[in-house]
Length: 256
Image (cartoon, rainbow, N blue to C red):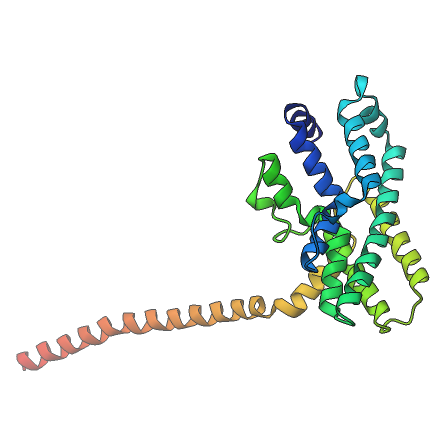
């Protein structure tokens, strides 16, 4: 994946820069679209654009590839991942609060905007792949949600309940607990090199409880169909026997 990103950056720097900006500011763009605001409003913050562009440039075009080699060390990756999760919490809270200014206590809108701002980079990956010319329909984020999208949706629901006073926890305490959960989970997944979602068991149990009833009834229907087919074959085999017995009786009466 890294070699492919480097090849795209060297071959088409403009496309690589644009996809990097989408990944950095995708949450803001998506939340602006949902709230009918100008989607290019993020370009007004020159400091963030210059900072993101500088990081993109030194990552792909630094002499001797020093930046990518430094980032290859695990402690540096853990530090960057922790900082990213802290930023995710602030984005979710900002999205929920911003949506509440337009739609007072609108749960669905607040959850959607908080989710979009916190995980916009992963949700908007389809458009990002389309820009790079490597769009893959099977990698659709809506069909197979990634861990950042799932955990951001969970955080958006939690902070929406807190904002609407349905969760008796202060915002700062909830932000601290949620951020510690994100950082600890992400670091554990990186150290153990596993992609298993921490609440996969809960997802499986909830899916079976809400949407697994049809799967439970299907084996019963198959058993009933099997029994009926057996009964049908039994009746079909009994018909030739009855016909043969009738012919024997007719021959016996003719002889007599």
